[in-house]
Image (cartoon, rainbow, N blue to C red; front, side, top):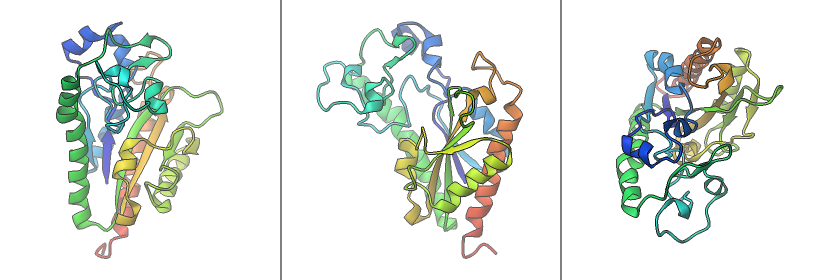
Length: 260
């Protein structure tokens, strides 16, 4: 069992804040607030974890290196951006619908190369290394990529479980995750509106026994309205991650021929 938390980093470099158009508060809007703290119990139970310390505003580890809007890089021309990058949420986030542009200007090609070398590639290399260690011992391993989503309209799902429409995880793991969340009283959707990003796409390989699942939690279920302080539901959501790690870890271990 391995957890990844790519969007809760809070180590804001002063130069990053100085480059922002509206200051640190505007960049914090990109965070999945407190998700690293939600996973603390699962880690204490023995789940491994790769947690980004760099903020998403700096570089998004849940985007592929090519998922980039050319306007983010000085002098860059080339391929048309993907839909997410065009919306401002690419490898280098550029804008948010509610506040507009995030930055005073683009970064240089050399700055992009540094971000890839110092943050993005090491994050994925760490995931690769940990999954390889687990795969040496177990036939099946599970990666849970942990996220939060903006508050959903009344009646919609509290939890969205994404497996890239069955391509990043075998059905048994996705169904088990769904069952855990529903047993704890959460309303669950699968793959809509979030099917999973670059992390589960890159690291999920069911044919090789690597099952990657993205979990999105409505942040109003665990945060106060300031979106940065634990709310009344914090312990309940934290327990969800505990149970996901415990149950999926046990199921994966039990599938090994040496499980006895």
